[in-house]
Image (cartoon, rainbow, N blue to C red; front, top):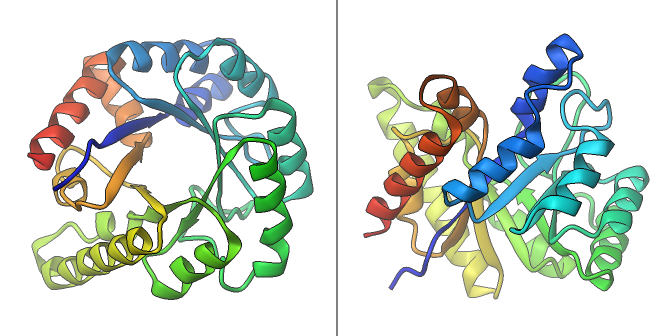
Length: 247
């Protein structure tokens, strides 16, 4: 039996558009409120070290105004830990971050950073913040999350999403199997399993059908689709696609 599947909407790239002109619009907080009205179960925002999109002020306003959970994506740095502890969002997802990347590339190497991550996971948990680790669908990374005591893992679906052509069908099937196996292993070890990155109307069904998943986090596609149909409609259509896949 599959349980309910939540939709977290990432509003980072509303801020990207705002920052392109240095104006006060479009407002990512307004986008978050519209997404919530349209059926989003949570809002995700990534406060990057270079503040290329979401800003500290955005996080403060989101924490103050949202009635649904805020998921703060953050690098494993002392600065971001201090910010998370100050605002105490519902959840904090620790992600890898490199200044030169256009978007998050790959999963966090939790297995190789146990000593670095352990005190952060502990501090966030003690503050009542639910910790998630954004990892590749790999057994070693899942096992590291268990060792670290993180209650949630988010599986990186970017490689699956990139393998979209018919020539990639076999590779995509292999990546989907990796996601299934990682989700099953994580759930078997008592972790809540989320997934996200690169998901669209066209590729979400196979991911949403993975029975152990409890949440998908989707942003860039929804913000892009909102240019044509509006954000509430984009969110509603994604919700419908997820629900249909869930059966």
